[in-house]
Length: 171
Image 1: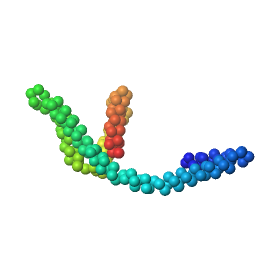
Image 2 (image 1 turned 90 degrees about the horizontal axis):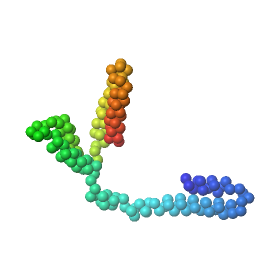
Image 3 (image 1 turned 90 degrees about the vertical axis):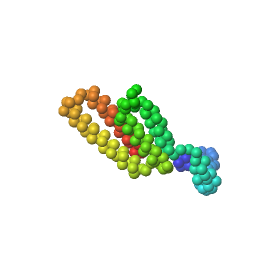
Image 4 (image 1 turned 135 degrees about the horizontal axis):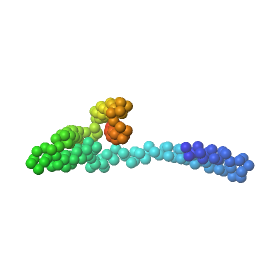
């Protein structure tokens, strides 16, 4: 793109301008050197850098599923003592169930290099369908006068957050 602009500027100079021919020759030379020089050296440069070797250098980094498995395990460890009351009874069974499930699922996939995209997409498609159904019901409730404008705004915001999270998670 810069070569085209350089050439356009050089050609737009008045013919009577002193040194115009030199500017045209110089711009052609610069374009030729950059196109041919960079174009012919990029292959050997990539071969010399050896990007396949970069994977070996990054072998000490965790994959996304491995990192999520550790994060979910840490979250479960934080929830476990807080989910039980002083007498040992479970006071937050749904949270305990949710974080236990998430930890077990991420642990099951931690040996993968990435989460299966078809499983992830199908999961978030269901979430997005649920959000869409909730929006339809929310608008019906508002139109029939069963909820006021302020509650509509609060609930729409919550649905927006769910939709953003699902859209981002789907990729």
